[in-house]
Image (cartoon, rainbow, N blue to C red; front, side):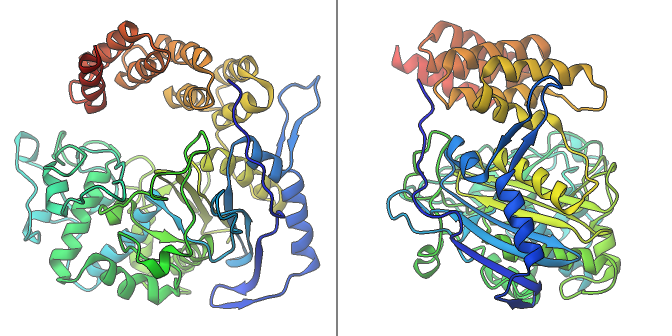
Length: 512
């Protein structure tokens, strides 16, 4: 089945904003910035695959059409200022309302570093400690003790750096018509919560293990210490101080804000029911915002590290935030050892994806937000285009190109590129590289090609529970239930806690 295309019926320029500083926005555009924008839009993709072939080049509107992305918003940072911000496409395919720089998007996991700023503000006030047992301050709920917490405890530093040894990687959110759980029900995995209990599953401090569950404990900790609803506390302690007037952690989104929000869309172009999911896990995934506001946040952090802003955090605390704990995880942000000064975070909620990256040393960065599950796929291409145009020295992971190569030149071309990347020691290739390609194929209607890619991933990562789970999903879509069962069972054998595999096996058995 051919991947469905969306015709963007509005002009590329929905709205543009050009400014000299985040606190002083001017409705003007220099000829220099206008030329930068023109080049980025004209060469959103410029990729050399083979020295004997012309490079793969693509305009921004074509890139959005190819990936079924209805709406996109960008803010580019240069010399610690917002150089320009611009909206593209539409908020949804029913109203055809143009995306503007004021259009709200869900930030997904970019909610985490903003929330971390609030927690660090409380540390500076002496209300929280980075390195004491969080159970000392938690009142409404306590982290259950077990064999892993006998000698090492869950601390705020470990929560923010994903080194607390906690479960629950991320959250799917809740349909707008579904009952919403309390935060305590989410922490305990009690209905109507749709995720497992958040528990310590390895010795705190021993390793990095990404956990949205840990950030949810952080949210409860801030509520217990301040006695305030989380959205109110974040508005007062972070958002207002930085000037982020188009940002809110309110879940569900109030009606007067909802009218400015984009509608989330899946990979197949279909809208999320009710326009978006609701995320009571606010600190982990609940921020509604704009690229302009997130760019202001990134600039604030970069300048605060130099002692030049400090509206939310001191220079000392910002340096603490941007110091790796284990690997490349700081307190809220991820840091890049190969790119000094670089801090970033991606985000993905149901039907929304976003990218934030900034450099404290160069003052260059970008925020890209889309109302699409393909937002990061096209966002990665745009970050490269912007980096080339503004002369960044940033290194990139090449594996992110595979979905684009498939879209433009087919599955075999993407697989051939994968083979080439594996041979090159300068490029990082892991199980997510082929998995991302496989899901792009699966949701593009290329089920057999998806099976081929997932089978290849199983061969290369036979000890990974996740790759068998993905292969099982592709067999389910192909109607091959016995093969789906076999792969889900293998996934469970490798990871008995894989709730998705358990749920899928239950559904298969019920349907027989």
